[in-house]
Image (cartoon, rainbow over all chains, first blue to last red; front, side, top):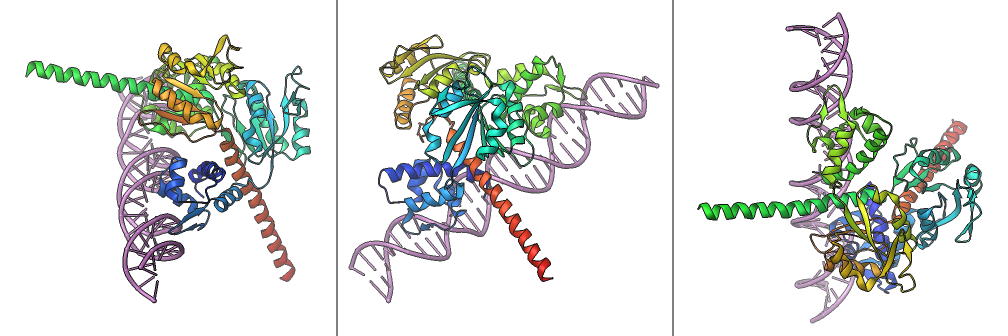
Length: 224
Length: 224
DNA sequence: AGACGCTTGTGAACGTGTGCACAAAGTTGC
DNA sequence: GCAACTTTGTGCACACGTTCACAAGCGTCT
């Protein structure tokens, strides 16, 4: 299955869940694509990788398709997750309800700061970073979330990997290296803003260019 | 400039900043690519869109290249940003130092909950959502960050756009539609985890397949 | 000055992703 | 049962992105 398709499945899942909550039983690729914000041909091609789950002339059964995507992503089982770094962002992640409702169970919270250890967040006590390896092994954790400062990120990732974690979601603004076989994704809050700033600047640039063009027209009008 | 290149410029910028802090004066494409975690040919092609800023046989001057990328992204000017929704995530975003140090100034915090209005976060008083349009216009805000619950996201985006915001970074787990000319990026915390889960599941699947293969070998050994 | 070594910048091949357009297949109405 | 209509699934062409491989250019050393 293409990586681009995998990245869109959660999007479809969310759209389907919204439809199911509204009591919609079946949906066409056109409708589903619209509510997911993608092209309908792309949606159909994506879904075709799962199998032929639609009915021609009718569309897709919402609940059935939702179940198939859930199964394909692997959300029928519970994934134990450890969050490392319980600062502002770590707190926000620990409190974020969207994880629990999608098959991700926050199994442990870890921080290196002794003054944070023992604090209770969402019913879980924050444990010290020294225990990281033990926690990962005892709880059979495969997925780690890193929300530490940038300087700690590489060390934390190394320790997570050594302890047996094979998927890491990195929120720290740092580039970390992981060995082959370990999946690493990163979410960078300021990178996204920078991309927006680039386009924003060009919008203003485009406005300026238009003004220059108007100036040229004006000059032509005067000269002609 | 290709969109993929734009998305990587912040990455290079970060790597260059790290190098500059270490006192490195010049860097080759090979070294810079390694610390940014990309292919060196890709890096060179990306940088070539900015101009010919390297010296053959030597490499790139770190400070100079950093300045060029900063200028290209548009980070030489300050961007005023409003954060809408001051829950756990909004707090984390408001406190995140990475914005301020990269040319983004958090100019206003807005929430719809009257009990949150007036609270002080990072030296800024939270203001009521009713004032949103006024705030955006008074402060000349072009970029909005949405950290509200999913159900409020579309309305908030509509109001931001109506007030003149032309770039939106959406953290709410909802699919929102914006008119042509408005840039929308979304960061979805649980989508990222779901993508990891998909690959994690396949790793286990691969492990199981290997076991099946071993079983076949074993059977062969017994039968042969 | 000229030869040598190193690194950039880029043409060209390749691979991945997207979107059109339509045949295949189902449903509905008569 | 058949015709008309709807919608899926997919072959195909095109666009985009990545990577290789190498010529062009710069610095250095003799």
